Each structure stands twice: as structure tokens, then as C-alpha cells.
Image (cartoon, rainbow, N blue to C red):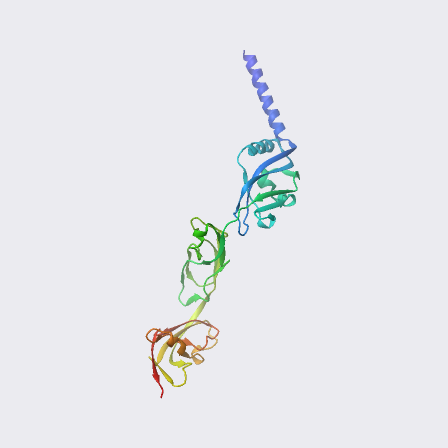
Length: 310
């Protein structure tokens, strides 16, 4: 009895070694895998409504062949294709050629598979139409600077707009999307990076994240007092401004090239007065010289009174 048990164990061990040896060898075999395509195509769903069987003659190990046959019996494999590889056939139908499919062999059949040839020249997928529109991306940012440093321009995003997809009633309420909060502290130099876009429930967004850049510079402040005068006043009309002077603080790029207080004057346009409420108007600079990042006028609002000059 003991001899029989030893014999059986020996046979099982020999069979196991033989099986492992044969499965490790490479074979030329036809593999077929159902594939659902994922692809970002303008105006269409990003997932195909159908699955297509992709068949190819491949050289691979016995292990891979068994794995491939098991995969073919299960749910379709989701493969993300580059939009430049997916070509329009007609309406919602798109196709990808065998030469382009060669770039996705590992995604379709798994690692360790060497392609010999595809059995079909093209494979088709249907991407249903989907409503969409282009909206701007608005940055959400919490930024602080070291003393005497500030942003030279507002934060810039790239891309600064995205395409959103979804049902019409959802799209009608969306005029912009927001980034997640960009938190930057104690800046004294320019900053850049990437930030994710806040998802919107029920909608798909073409980009998951955007790049941002912020140009930071050192500045110097120049304070001066200016006379505020009316401009474009019609003949026969007098426009009085109260107060007639204002304090202006310029924030200029350091080192300072030119003093803006020598060349900038402030005025109130008569057209602004005509459209004002109660004669309350803001003063505007005659020009903004290079190097001026920001200016602050105090007071912000002036009282204007119209009188006849006759």
C-alpha cells in the first residue's frame, strides 16, 4: 500500500512538472477578447455603447493562453484609446485600424503577448452623441506673500476652459467650473503646478486637472496727492468734483524705473456721471505706465454736481 502511495505521488509530481514546463513554453495561438473602448471624442460619450471582439494571432506562453481564454469568457475589457487613433466612420460609429491597435496589445491581451497579426483590418465602436458645451475654469486660490511681494498678474490656467458633457437640463445651469483650492503661502518667487478640477455631479468634464502659473515680483510703494478733474464735459455745462483731490498709492515693480506720479493724472468722465446713481463716480487714471502693478485711490468714490456754466 505504501509503495502505491509513493507511486501515485511520483506520478502527480511528474505530471505537475510536465504541465508547468509545457505552460511555460511559447505557442502561436489565436486569442479573442471582447473590448469596450474608452476615448475622449468631442460631442460623444467617452465610453462605447458596444463591445467588439478583437482577435489576433499571437505568440505567448501557455499561461497567457489560458488566462486569455478565461478573460474572453468574462466581462469585456475596458481599453483607453488615444482620440487620434479613433476615426469617424459615420455618425456615432468610429473605427480603429489594425496598425494602430498594435499599440494596445498589452492592454487588450495582457503582458507578455507578442503580436503576429490581427484577424481584422479594422474594429468598430459606437460612441453615442452627448450634449456638451465649453465653459471657463475659475481658479479657487488662497495665496499669501512675503512683505513687499505680490502677484504681477492674476493667476493663469492652462487650459483656461474645458468641455462639460451631460443632459441638457444639467448643462443649462453650468456657466463655469472651479479648481480645487490652490494654497500657496509666503511667496517671494513665481509659482506653477497643476490642480484638479472640482467634479460636478451628473456631468463629465473633458479635463481632470489644469496647470496654473503665477508670476510674483517684489514691489515698492509710492504715495502722492493728485487733483481729480472732470473730462469730456459738454459745452455750457460745469461738473464739480468733491473732494477735488485724492491720495493715490502706486505699487510698482522693484527696482523702480520711472516715478508714475510725474506722468499720471486722474479724471472723472462725464459719461460715467450721466450713468451714475446720485452723482457718485470713480476716478480713472489717464494712463498706466509700465512697471505699475496696482494703484489705490482714496477716497474710492467722489460726489459730482452738474451746474450750468452760463
